[in-house]
Image (cartoon, rainbow, N blue to C red; front, side, top):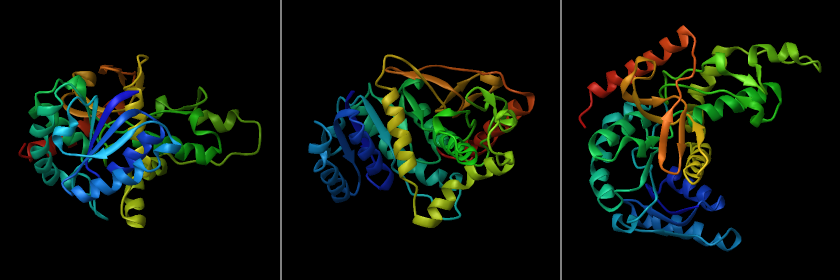
Length: 313
């Protein structure tokens, strides 16, 4: 259990993350900071009043000074994506917001692990690493963890099998240039392409890979159009990442991190499997990919670099 987790941003995403962390009892203290102080107070109070049925955790609002000695800092602050707006359209607006946050939070919590959730997550993770002075192994974004969860959920829905039996990842940007390395995807060790043929029960529905990837990329937009925001799945995803940071035993997760030559890619943040644990990133795994998959990853890196070149950090 982390002693203290600070969440910057108490909107729908930040408050849902706080709620998920509380339910999973992943901290003894959760601090919620927001420029809208009354909103942060109300969200913290609402969660805190349910803690007698959960466990001993202090959930409260505060200022940056209250983040002192945080083990983990989660950053969700930023302008929310509007219907029809891409994550990258938000880039400069949220870059400017992060500029104001970085000096204030790193001053009081220089030894924390920093988890970026705000979008565009890959760009903001890169900005934080390049401008904060915090070592890159302690700064990472949720990246394609959510995309990977959407992928697993979609295949599970198609074949009506438990989500935990679906293995595979989404690589690259958390956005339009993400992709599934299908060569890695399997259902209980059986490649997804062969699962239907190996199953001797009722005939299984076939699925189109392009449709699955399209579903992954468009899910956020569909949810935003329907209810105005996405918060539950990213809340659970972020809590899972924070949970992994509690353990001495490492986990492999598709977080956004600064690549250092993997697949010939460097100086950009995007998602490939990374080994994470109590002290942050231990390393990344350059899993064997097909040539077209390596090309897709490099295309994703190039797309992000094109945006970075247009921004003022």
